[in-house]
Image (cartoon, rainbow over all chains, first blue to last red; front, top):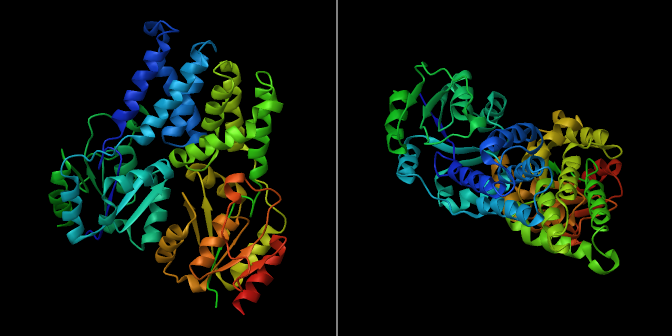
Length: 234
Length: 234
């Protein structure tokens, strides 16, 4: 029996990671004026900075922008011009202002699930930006609750279950991230529907989800989610 | 009758604004190598940038840091060195890592109010940083719920009342900001206890709170809050 269904947002309901990857590509281009990109391992160094800073900044575009700036100053041995640093600030602003583009079948799929279950949106990251995207998506009316959390781990899901007055055994989570959407929910005894997205951020790719769990379904698009939930619920 | 009492966090339970003001002072010192500070109106220009960026960044130290960087590049006509820009990044990190210092009598006052009412913490700003401060404060166990919101206006308070299952007429808010803690709650029919803090951020100082309201008490420290709530409730 499934009563409550949670939906992830970024790269589940709408595109997100490509905007970050585009910012990373432009970051490399800017650094190309200062470095031999073939030697510099820009991508790895940026990941190192992000991994270190995430404990301080959390997830989201503002923290990413500060990590871009810090990495650029390090990698260029502080020779980068402040005009180019302003370009890095603009990369962050571009992520914060891009239009919200829904993935295919999203509204129909959420609406169909909502006919049989209470549905909530559970998204990780920057509160301000996530709220703006929910507003721009036009989907807010479909959800009983919108929860922006700083981390999607078992502690967070447990707190949400308490706030929702729900037990994990009656909850299913739909999302693209095995690490954030599937692993902790399965671990707590809930259900998962994994909808893989084309690309995954390196820091999001590490996971220990039980891919053999009978409480997990993997689908290829949001259009298949209502049937997957019905199967799990049956 | 008051059933639920909300407490603001920054500059109500613990010191916050002085860390931002200290960052601003160091920002001016760094810019002093590039500009005649007497002419440059650094403070006003920074506020202009913050006012513009707040619609994109929301509140908090990461957005402030990006605004420092942007203002510095503008004001120095892009002559600021990237070493000095790294110093601005460090100013932001210092705010994110300062220890949480409680204001006097905070734990006792919240605990006393909690004996007679449900108490919740309602704070505005960066989700990740606010959660870290709540954790470090040692106060989390006193609160029934912790709510980090992106803006404290009537729309946000109305949503929270719905989530709490509470009407505004049975709610009192305790905080240092007339704009964020008092004005919207009084406007919705709730009660307010204003605990002014020594300094207020310029963008927080504008307000239209009804200072003559019989549903408002003004006190000089957290120690006086339990009595003020009892008065309002009686």
